[in-house]
Amino acid sequence: MSKISAALLFLSCAHAADLCPPPPGPPSITHGGQVRWTSFSSKPTQKHCVANQVTASGLLIEWPAAGIERADVADHLEVAVCCFRRESAQPEPLRFSGHEMIVNTHREDPKPPGKDDDDFPDLIEEDAHGRAISIRGALGDPKHPIRIDLLLRFQPVASDLRRVVSAMKLSPNIERVADQATTVARRARKLNRHPPLPETELIEPLYALAMSMFKDAIDAYTHEDVPQAMAVIPRDEELDEMNATLQKQLIDRMGQDPDQLRGYLNLIFIARCMERVGDHATNIAEDAVYAAAAEDIRHQPQTAVEDR
Image 1 (tube, rainbow, N blue to C red):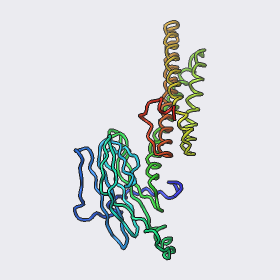
Image 2: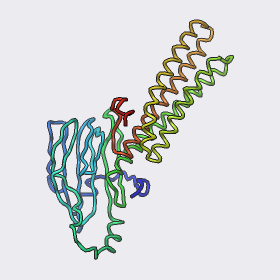
Image 3: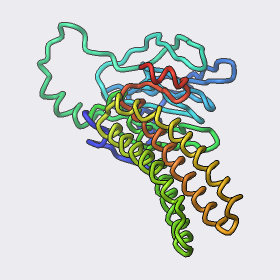
Image 4: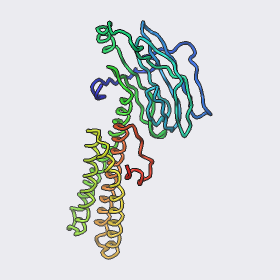
């Protein structure tokens, strides 16, 4: 599947247990009270399904064999896959918070080497229309989790989860940019009720930089362009410095011309909105890198990002 949008169905009833019913009493294993995971297989029809579940709170989980490459698990995450001819359970790594454990992971067993493809017509008929993956859980910040409950059809791959998560995080950032635009419009309406301030022109460089960051971040996400996304991130520091300098200038002008105090305050709020647009553009750029390259760069030092 080339794009997640090719076949994405949001179902309120989608659940790992619905797609792959668990056997009686599946084992649940806990590590130090931080992470609990379960892996099992089932055979609801003539074919197999597998389900892998992990429970954690605010931890970055990596369980590639279960289809979880890198996910901030706020509460729990379940991934179930159905249906295929063979399944197997192998020791596979599960990583979190600097720990690595080898856990028994159920997954599809690939076709043995040398097996004839005489059933190829059946594969087209059954697998192309019968393959599905269920993803359910809560991701991101435990205080403000992103809840997902969805079903993907037509042979999804591990990168699909990254696209789903990054798309869900993209939408709130775009919405908050719109909120900043609304705030700017309200402040501009107040400014227009009074004689124009020459200092209004000082907003233009911040506006140009913030909007270029936002446009480039969206383009990078849309085209999965990692270098373009990485180029957005260092510009956020430049925008922060421009905002700090402008605010200092406007505060100085307040003391020199107290009659225009409200006008200068409105300009300060508008500049702050520009700085926030840059923050959201940076978040989108980081999500673009995560979706395209499976790399989380949010908490890396700025020098490490610039050296890539």
